[in-house]
Structure formats: C-alpha cells, structure tokens
Image 1 (cartoon, rainbow, N blue to C red):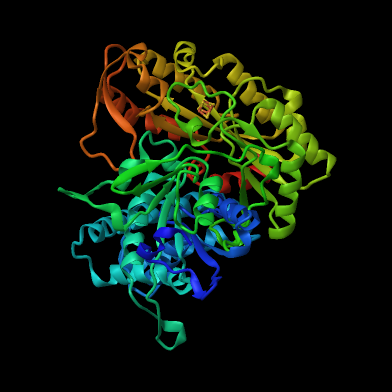
Image 2: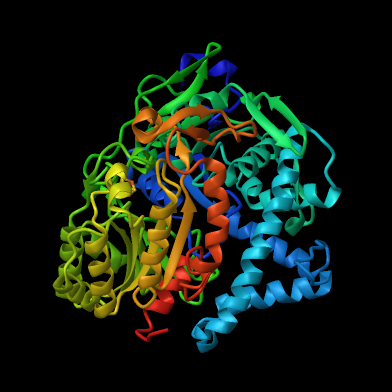
Length: 584
Ligand code: SF4
C-alpha cells in the first residue's frame, strides 16, 4: 500500500495481507436516444480485463442511459411520471411513447419499414427524448445546487443507481460522449458519493453499505476541451435565471483525458493513488491540479475485442442490433478548419483491415449481429477497399455504414464495397461552394462530390450528407448555391444532417480568426462547463444573426429533400432501411 494510505477513504484489504479485488463500474450516463450499445465502456472493460491489472479487478458496465429511458417508460405507464407531448394528454402520451418504442424494437417486423408509420413514431420518440431530458436535466442541476426537487424525481435517480450501489464499486468511471450527459453524471456522482446506506428492495430491504468510492470522468467531451482540468476547480450550474458556482471536489476525483485505456489502467494499477505515471490523468494533489501527458495504445491490432456482455445489443431501440465498431483512431485528413474531432485521439492510427474484419466476425458470432456501424472519424477510399476485400475473402454476411470524405471514391470501389455489405455512407459534404470548401480546408470539389454521391447511389449505397451553413465569409449566394446543389441530389441523397457553423475553441478558425473574416470572438454568456463554442462578429459575409435567420428559412426546403427527418438522428435505423436493397 502507498505510504499515504491512512488518509485514503478506501480500504482494499478484506483481510490482513490480502488485497480484495478492486471493483470498477464503467457507466454511460443519460441522456441520448439509446438506439445502440455504447462502445467506449465496452472497449475499456475489455482493455482492463486483458491488461496486467486484470486479475485484481472486477469490472462491470452499466448503461444508465438505456436504464433511464426504460425506467421513465415504466413510470410513465404506471402514471408515476406524467408527461404530455404537444397536444396529447398524459394518458395518450404514455401509450404513444410505449407504441413508438415497441415499434422500434419490433424484431423482424416488416411494419418498421413502412415509412409513414416510421416517421410518426420517430416524431413521438425524439420528442419524448427531448421533453424527458429537459425535465431531468433541470432536476439534475437543481440537485447539484441543493435546491428542492419533487420527491419522485429524487426517487427516480435513486432507483437508477440501485444496480451500481448493489455492486459497491471502489471506482466509478463515467464515459461522457456528449455535453448533455454532464449534469446527469454530476448529479449521479453526488448521489453516489452521499449514499451512506442503501436498502435493497429485492432482498427484503436488507441494507448494504456504507462504502466510499472514487469517481473518474472521461470520454470524448474532455478530449476536445483545451482545459478539462477547470472542471476540478469549479463548475457553473445554471437553472433558469439562477446561476451558481459549485465546488466539484466531492463529485469528481479524476478526469481521464484523451484515449482512456492507458490512463484508466494506470489509475487502477495505482489502486486509485495516481501519480506522474498515470497517462492523461488530471487530478488534485496538495491543493493543485496535476495533469499528466496523455498516451494512447500505439498498435491498435493489439486491442482486445470490445466487451458488450453487460449491455446486450438486442436490448436497444432498434429492431436489429447495430454494433458500433472503431477500426482507426484520429483522422487521416485533419485539415478542416472548423473541426476539433481530430483532437479526440492523439494521432492517426489504423487497425489492419484483416484484424478489423476478424473482430467484426467474432462480434457477429458472440452477439448475433449482422449490422455494424464504423464510428471511425472517416474511412478513406483505400481503407474501404481493403476492409471490403477482407469481408469478401471471408465470405462474410454483414451490413455496415461508415463516415467518409467525398474524395477519391470510384464506381468500381462502390461496387466492391456494396458486394461486401456497405449500405450507407455518411459524407462530410459541408458546402457546394468551391471557395468556401477551399477556405474550410476540406480538400473536396463540388463537381466530384456530386459524381461520388451518384456513384454510391448507382451501386446501391445510401447517402447521408452532413452540410454546414454559415461558415465565416459565406455569402447569401453561396448559401443558396448549396441549397440548389442539395436539391439536385434528391435522387441520390436519402438524408441530411444540417447544422449551423459553430466556432469551437481549438479549431483552426478559432486560432486564426482573421484569416476567416472573424473580427471579434465573444464569450457566450450562458456557457455550459464543457462547452467550447463561442460567438463572434464577422468583417465579411453573413453575420451570426443573418445566418440564423437564413437557416430557419432554409429548413423547409431542406426537409423536402430527406426521405425521413429522423434518419440523421437515428442512424442505426437508416442503416437497416438502406440494407433492404429497396429504393424509397
Ligand atoms: S471534419 Fe472530418 S475529415 Fe475533416 S478534419 Fe474533421 S474528422 Fe477529419
């Protein structure tokens, strides 16, 4: 044991001379629509179990996001939670939400592919997510401020935590992929840390606990923040007009920035007494915030298979499980001026195509999945070719989708990839203005983009287009040129993910604003703690307000291009649609 163990609240010694196994709970917190199992905690669990620390630990994964939706649905049905969506009354809302989730889970059901019904249920499901999350996010914030929340709301959070409490972990690691998960994770952290005794209703109310634990936050949200350590000093919580700074010292003990494997392993190896040798770890020591340089797994071919055993993929809101898979880390292009995604990973590395395919087939064998979503930042054409060749060589029957940059793809490649099971590509199109694309550093050409989209379509691959409006210096006529371009893609593009440009701290635009026509960067008055977005003023092109107004006016025209408005949000569903090999 380390010398300062006397002041540490956790004793790992069950009996003298023998350390008990360290219990680690990896948690995916609410609130995102649960259409597939979370990948980050599945990778980390597998890594910890296969690492040198594996023998001395017990790792269990908890998808509290899925549990939160399930619990809300149960409470809604039992009228313990009352919610109304639009013009529906409470009773009808509960029925409609249940019907939507049953519809999305209707395994083998053909009605899922009735687009009109799909769109109706999609509208209810996404609206339910929005209202539920808004409600519970505000409860979470109030709990952090110590303000009054309705007793059922506290009970709801307590019920959500029961499985973790009964596991009695020494370390809880929250994997935070999206900023909207932050306040949920903080509130759950507070409840875990302040639990002194828990009664297990399944065991005749027998109490267990008290115990104490350490809490680590990690995930992509922290990797792109220039200074994640600030979360260890203070957190600003805003509810309505009330804005207060809270002390997070009893909520977060460590932040694991960058790729999590090495940092978490070192933290566990230190038995929660981290030092300089815990890569990527940010922690408090003697009143100071210490930050160790991050370190990633160099050779991705040595990674263990993600472990989804605690989060069975068929439980999610999709008629067929769609498993996420990461076959490379980082972005091979890294030049887009608006992007901070490249910072999620240390540098670009790839798993060999044959290794990726071997693992996908093993996941298929273990979990009975046919559908896979490559969540790599993008697959470049050569890689699509290699992965497809391996799938064809193995005579595999899978269907998959991937992110891509529309450059360098040929009809021959699409043919081959379709034969291997590629059914959906999610393209970073961004704009149809050559000038704007050049300024963005996208390295693509609108004419080639069109040819590529048509080529994919001709091969039977569906296209989802990411488009970004209002890049600094963009003019109204360039904006309209993009709308015209999208109109011309009606036949070959099935969905759009449309967004407004966001100025993100750390992006090339942020670092050299004048080059992009930005005359002033302005702090946002209502900034969430993990937000890295800023407002700005421009010296040329559309201003922020003009762009906002134009965006609103453009939405009906954009909606007219998509087959389903919900495909861009529920991408697993879109892959299932694309895999039917039927035009829509
Ligand atoms: S937008 Fe995509 S292609 Fe461009 S740098 Fe970011 S991850 Fe890479």
